[in-house]
Length: 515
Ligand code: GTP
Ligand code: MG
Image (tube, protein in one colour):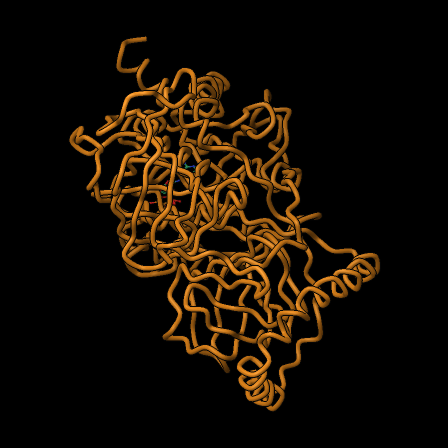
C-alpha cells in the first residue's frame, strides 16, 4: 500500500466515527375508504383557522392525550389487519451502472409496465440512438434524461413483494447531480448500490473521482443503514456470469465498505444480477446461466432486509421536500419520527405556522395515519403554499423541532478542493435532511486526534484533509435541525463546495440564542 492509499484508508476509517447507525422505519398505515368530501374540507379549513388561532394552548394540552388514545386504537387496529411494512430504497452508484435499468426492470417484473409500453420505449430509445436504454426509460421520464441517457431528477416508483411495500428512489449517478442523489439518499433506509461488472466500468466507477465511493460515503452519512450491492451487467459479453469477476469486485469493495462504516457481515449483501435482462431479480438465476450462485435473488434480498424499528410515539418530525396547492396546501416528505393523523394540529417550523392536518396520503392512498419511515403527502390548512420552503419541518406542537442559525458540529474533512486549508471563514453548502443552505465556519473549537479520538490540547486555527474537528457553523436563515445523538436522521450532514463533498459531520450542539 503506498502512502496515498494508506492515507485514504485512514481517512475512510475516520469517517466511521461519524457514521453511526440510526434506528429506522416502522410501518403503520391504515387504508381507509377513499372518499373525499369537498364540503368537509372547506368546513375543516374554516374551523381550523379559528381553532388554531384561538385554541392553540388547549390543543397543545390535548395533543399528548390524543397521541396516547390513538396509539391504543392503533394497537387494536394492527391486530385486525395484516399489513405490509414499507421501505424506501435508494438506487445509487456510478453513472451508467444500470440503476434506472434495474429500477425499470423491477417495475416491469412486478407487472406495472405492459409489453406495449416496453415496445414503445424500445422504438423511442432506438430513434434517439440509445437502443439499450429502453428499460431505463421506465424510470427516466423526462426528455433531457432520455436524450442523454442520464438520470437527473430522482425517479420515484412503487412496488410490492410478499412482505413489503417499497418506494424506489432512482438517484442520478453523474457527479453534477450529487445534490439530487443526496436528497434521494436522505429519504431512504436501504440502498441498492449498483456496480457495473463490465470490463473497465467497475474500475472507472471505483477509482477516485468515480461516484461509487462518494455515493457509499454519502449514503452512510445520510442514514442509509443497509446496503445491497448488486453486481450488475453479469450478462455482458466481457463478464458472462464469471465468478472470478464477481469475486474480484466483492473483494475490492469489501474493505472500502468497512472503512465507510458499514458492518459488512450484518448490513451488506452482495448479489449478481442482469438488470437489462432481468436475471436473478424476481426469481433466482437458473443454474444453466450461472452455476455458482446459490444465494437469493434481488426481490428476496430486498424482502429480507431488516430495518431497526423507529418509535411511532416520538415527537412528530417530517422534513418537507416538496409542496403544492391542492384543496389546501399539500406537503410531501418522509416521516422521521412520530405519527401523523387526519385532524391533528401541528406546527410548520421554523416559521411557526400552526396548521391542521386535513388528510394524509401514502403513495396514492388516503390513509388515517402514518408512522415513521412512511413517505407521505399531508394536506394542511392554516398555511399558504408560498410560505413553505423545502427543508421546513412539520412538527408536533408539544415538542416542535428546534430552529437555529448557528450550531456546533463534529466534522470529518474528506478532501478539500485544491487542497485548501479549512479555517474560520470557510464557506460551503450545507446539506442536512431536506435543507440546502450556504454556511460559514465561524470558529474551530477543537481538533480531535484521529488515533485516540480525544480532543487535542493545542488551540486549532486551521486543519487539512482528513482532520476531525469540532467547529461552530453559521447559516443566514433559521434551519430546523436536531442533535445527532437525539435524531440521527436530522443531525447528520454533508458540506459541499464546487460540486464536491468536502466534509461529513454530525450536529453536536444547538445555539438557541441564535434563533
Ligand atoms: P445514470 O442515471 O446516468 O447514473 O445511469 P444509470 O445507472 O441509471 O444507468 P442506466 O440504467 O441508464 O444504464 C446505462 C447503460 O447500461 C444502458 O445502456 C443500459 O442498457 C446498460 N445496462 C444497464 N444494465 C445492464 C445489464 O444488466 N446488462 C447490460 N448488458 N447492460 C446494462
Ligand atoms: Mg439512471
